[in-house]
Image 1 (cartoon, chains in turn blue, yellow):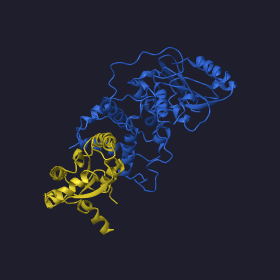
Image 2 (spheres, rainbow over the protein chains, first blue to last red):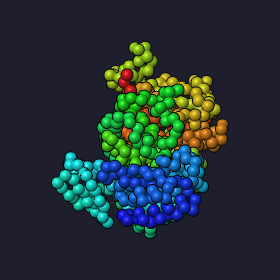
Image 3 (cartoon, chains in turn orange, cyan):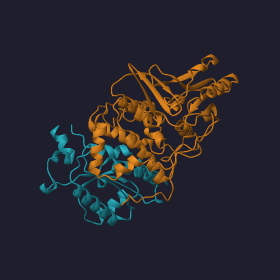
Image 4 (cartoon, each protein chain N blue to C red):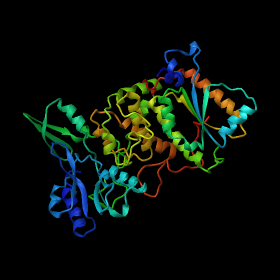
Length: 316
Length: 157
């Protein structure tokens, strides 16, 4: 995935020039090392800003909401799938979106690198093909990218966007053999008490900053259920049950919609393992309703439809 | 405040254990067209069932939002029962089928997070099934009794 930038700039430039889009949403270098930031480009002269490397971890589909112009958007496999979900839910006019698909071999997880650095400050980071060179005050380290990749990417099922208008480069081979539900399976094998203990521990540190909600392209409600005051369903403080309920209901709302891009986990300042919940939501959609999220705009959201022979083993 | 705590039922008895004569309080959301009528029939037929349930009549099982169920647990109800028409019998044609998917997801998630599976139950009871209603309630109450007072997810205020 390193080195596709020229191609991206060329495609983006063509789309702007030919008037196919008014705006390109992509990534540019962030102000800190190992960080990228969303880039909104309307002018040909700004195309040089666009980058494409393993720091491009933001799910850009979040920025499609509420825009009324023709947009060209860079989309990894997960981003493209979330664009599809937003499209199928009527939130985005797919006719106005040009998806520039990026086959993606995974993005890095900054928290893993921070842990490896043990407090040393990273001042500069550069990417080679399979490795990452990190420089700081008096040290330089070469790390394998794979070891510091986001967990979602290690078992990603759709490295290539299933839906796109233009594809940058060649499709990557899909990962086979990785059990993406390993963590969920492990939790499920534990007793109810242990699971409760696990979630109390995880959610207990939540400060209700709503970063997870803010980065999530599926969280587009004008008013979130936790913000409602009439009726005020649940509390807004970081009281334990209120916090657990916030995460529980968010996971329920994401069932059949979450594409496991991992944005929420990466955004969490308290390092809460939100993937344990979102992955379960995805697993329910797949196993219970045989629904693979974000492959086509034709399919209705899983909780918006029903089948007469849906399983009902839980009903007494 | 004390009155409130008493009213919230088992909450006031949180310290107690099932051997001290603790009785669970269970909130039951019954659909107007089938299960509520089924409960009515059970009453008319003088069928005996445990008096631990408090009934809330709703237009349809699909009126029951997951929020109702989660909020009930948070407020200290020891169990929640949701009952509607059998699939195919819904007064609104497909309300219970939509609800079924929603409840399936809710139940899976609650189980996964470690809320005991017996706390929240779903059933289909038709207007003619007074006897079935009494059996369902007996089963639910027995299950919740075995679990003891609700503690997880209960907000202590």
